[in-house]
Length: 269
Image (cartoon, rainbow, N blue to C red; front, side):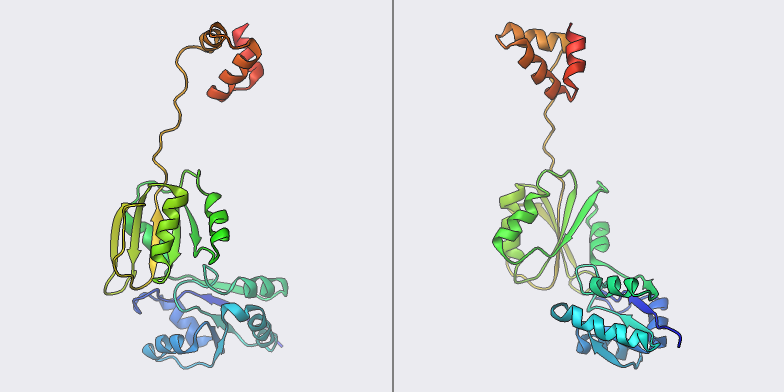
């Protein structure tokens, strides 16, 4: 019996027209479709007149759902995995299934589609191309702080997904940990009320939270500490003249200039 294939299919993040021809073709051809919310996916399929059996695959039951899908693959059925919006596995269920399907030797095919993170970055107009996608942050305060502290000193924009229930508290926490950085808040991507607002953490406020949000905290604009003036020899000499020992002066100048201590020592003598 020929083994089935698993297709990871990207679906629209809002506007139903944002689906690829290949995605539609795949959804029409597979034997069944695994989805987060069968009612939500049924709306998309009905819009494009696609009728296929649906099975549920959602976050709290990912491992059980993966076992069921693997059984179908073993029976030679082709399965498409979709989520409510965007690409599976990107802040959505799917990673466990993909990992286990690969380990079991099944073919896994990606059918790319819209994702909120790249859409929001393009819409923000941020010139610095380096960013880190974090997605949804944990629910517990301690875990939130531990996560954000890892990125506090990173010279890159940070991209978060926020629900309307959490957006206000999340913005306060971002300010608490990351400081008064510039922020872009994008709401309802690709939908009728899509909007992009900009401001500064600590000052930016949302009066009435509605819809899903992508929050981009811009990279810190703090200037790096300037290096001391003068040659290495002059810097070491000035410190020694001020009463600092030769050993400590060499160590301090090496640190300030980002040089090995032995290199500073050779230059000084």
